[in-house]
Image 1: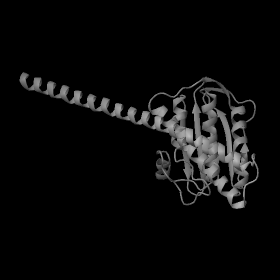
Image 2: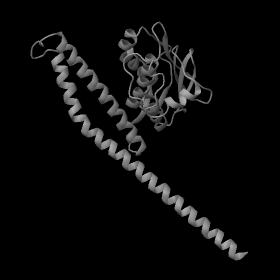
Image 3: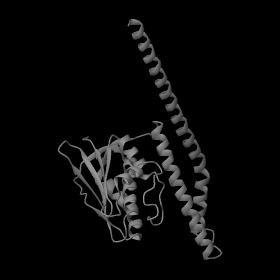
Image 4: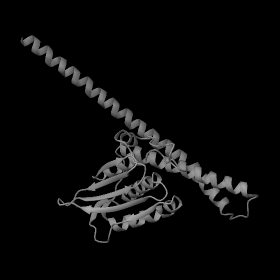
Length: 259
């Protein structure tokens, strides 16, 4: 019996050793992947910035008019495509930084009212073009949250942009905030868009996951919007939850504990 027990202990130790080695190997592989993506992204940003910059100079006709309307159209397409690629690369950089535990956060007290106001301003034009009404129910008496101001704005812009994209003309996108009894602050973005099933929500939270790809007008986005937003929220100590119903719209809630 003692011999059997010894064998069992040794076998268990061997299994644990192999599991630890596999875990370490997987972590190293994941870190290497993230570092590779980060390095590649940096290499791609330099020429892309030049493409975006020069196409903008051409479209603004700083050095004189272009030859014809077709050339103007092509220059705008070049600029738009370049900007889309840059957005994708920036998202990949952020995901890589989070996965490699290298995301720098400058956490401070963030005024929700100011952050929402600035984010809505960036989405105003896009919403008007799509015939979507933006509704802000946040007043100036909302509590502050402890977060990174720039990253918090990125979270809000991502959520609002996603809501506008999946809401048809004549629909609304609302943003609000509420305080809970335990001192937590919840920010919510609700839309009257096409909504999602539970399965589609799961897919939407996966990097590059596509939901309703055929129904989305204009830009399809990077496919990293919601997954990256969730990562950014959790990196700042918050939680993100999605509730949705097909044909009825979607609500995304971001919760931060009491400061």
